[in-house]
Image (spheres, rainbow, N blue to C red):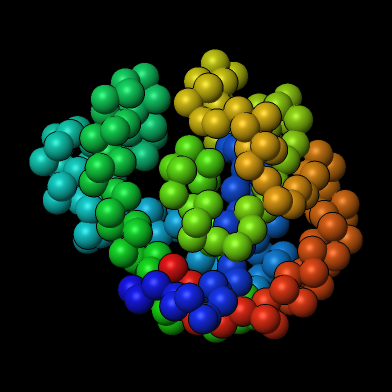
Length: 215
C-alpha cells in the first residue's frame, strides 16, 4: 500500500481495543450504528480459522488434528487453553494468523464505506504496530473484577482461566497509557451511549480533514 506523501495528510482512523470482557464488540457495534465503518480483526481471525478458512491447513500442520474439529474448524476451546499455558505455542499460532489477518484487514479497509474506519484490535497495545497505523487509540476500559465476571458468565470459564488470559494481555494501566480516548464500560449500554455519541461527533470533525487509504 502506498504510504501518504509528505503533502498528503495521513488518513483518519481509530484503533479500538480493550481487555477481554471489556465490551469492545458492543462499543464497536454502537459506533457502527452511528455510521463508522467497523473492521474487526477478531472476526477476521474467526473467518480464517473456520471450516475452509485460509489458516486451517497451517494450523493443522503446526498443531495436529487434535486442534481441528470434526467440522474442519480450529478447536477454539482447546487452542485457547493450550496457547495461554504455553507461550511458544501462542507465538506459533500468532505467526500463522497475524500475516493473514494483516492482509485481510488491508483488503477490508480498502472496501469499507462509512464516516471513518474503526479497527477493532484486541491485542493492539501488545502488537506495538497499530500506533502508526491509526490516528487515535480508543480504549474500552472497565474494572478488572467486572472483566472477570463478564467472561466467566459469557464463556462459562473458571476464574483461574480468565485470570490467565488477562495475565497474557497488556495490563489495564498499559492500555490506558496508550489511549488517546477512553470509554468507561463498568455499567450497561445506556451508560455507553452518551460517551459514544460525543466521541463520534469529535471523530467526524477530525475525519473531515483526512482522506486516503486506511492502512
